[in-house]
Length: 324
Ligand SMILES: [Zn+2]
Image 1: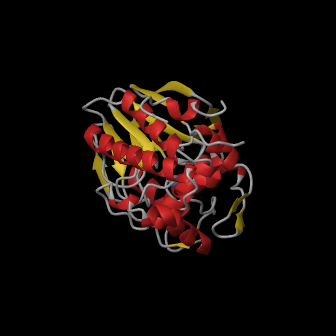
Image 2: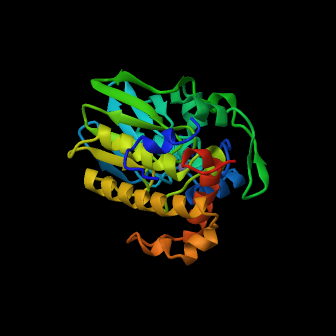
Image 3: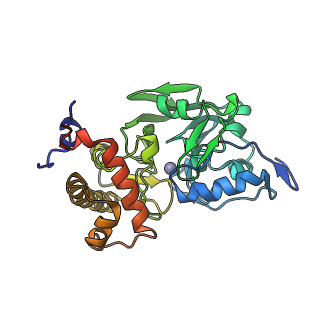
């Protein structure tokens, strides 16, 4: 089966504090290793005094806050700030300190993971409108189970949950900027979203691009390799040669950087979908040398292949698997 058509994959199927502070714990660990750090920090509920985080100016009004523990994008105007992702619960006070005294009026979550949505409680409590895909709101509204850790994570408090949701795409303004946002189907979780600052030509994509950490597929939450490739193609349609693409972790990407990662994921898709449909396991794929073909060293190639196989099994009918 050939997958040159970017739509083929899905269509192929059956159709201000000082000293030590206590922070609210939001969410738990699912797919991301960065989340593990966030979860470990959150588990103690005690964090050091907030500190100013490193920043990078992307334009006159747009600042990237790093190490929160990942990236938090801030668009600033006289009304305050719009954020894309809120960082971890443990670092939320530091994000606010870095922003200064102006309030956060709007917050987008690219997905539910606690290293991106962990600061929701702080900003929600202060009155921010929180926007996300509907499924991300659902993940943040109920207890959920983490199979790899054999434990449940309690739902965050009401104030941390998205107040505005969408299912496909939408548009709004913040200051003079037009904001476009939309769904990235099953790319990393089942509730991923992009947020495009159209006038600034800055496109935040959350964990759907992963130039620093191993790309992760939260298969238990609905992410899988086919969805990842399709979503990356959707992002390529939005972007142009001058677009700054902001991943959840790592440096801002050019279009060429992003295209290279997409092509790597495409190669992995072609190889892994074929092998899995022929009954091969993650270990088989590792031994077949799949991870030696992509020109990048993953920290934990077996884990990537395990999550890949699980996601492919969950979407077996979407990639030509025979179910009868
Ligand atoms: Zn994530």
